[in-house]
Image 1: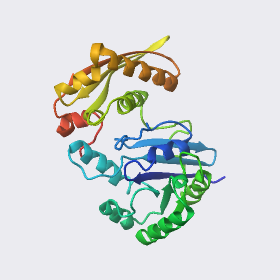
Image 2: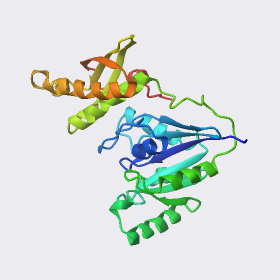
Image 3: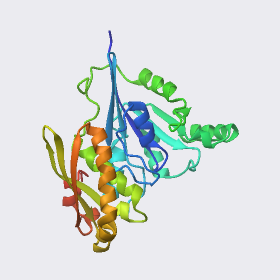
Image 4: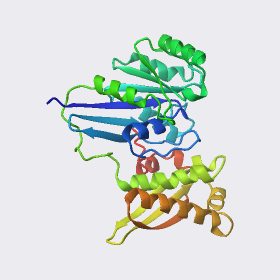
Length: 294
């Protein structure tokens, strides 16, 4: 029996549903999802295994023009996904304009890899508008195959996945057959905490914080976790903590519940808030936080 393995990079602009699609295709909630742009900051791998294939999906940050070094790193993650793959899955939706971020589209057109353009959120569109979008994308990326989908409502995802299986090459698996991702548990713990910050705080706060897991101690009865929320300015620390610590307490309670579901074990979570001025523009801190500066 032949075996197929391949890497599929999911790329596109912010807020088109890349993380929702990856979680749907993988069948596990690996990428955090909120309605805010720039929710995904890293390349996150999700692996689908069967006896005769292994598909390695990569969720990438939304493509944007960088304003500071953190965003430069996020853009590098997205651009590297155009070369570290067997298939490019370019995700757009029925809301954004097709000429948004033309520079990145030029990079997609340059690739010799198979390109699939998935038009997401078709439940928010009409058939006439969808036909117009499909024609427009065929003009923009002539070699691409066009798939209308709704990741939220799981429409046409099976057909999309079947086509991906047809396109990936014959190869032995790249990861162990029981692997789901290449990231450690502590990474997903930090992402769960950051997701709660995105959900519960407004304006600039979610984009000015980074979560560091200082301790992840797995004991027989529970997992002890110490997390540090780094903020860029003094004023942000008070907002994160809230009056009499109520905001931080709510954040910790909700994060702990989701972490316990994720690792299937009781969790004791301590969260500290630290002012780390201008961390988004400091190379050494970005490296420590996992944003490679190459």
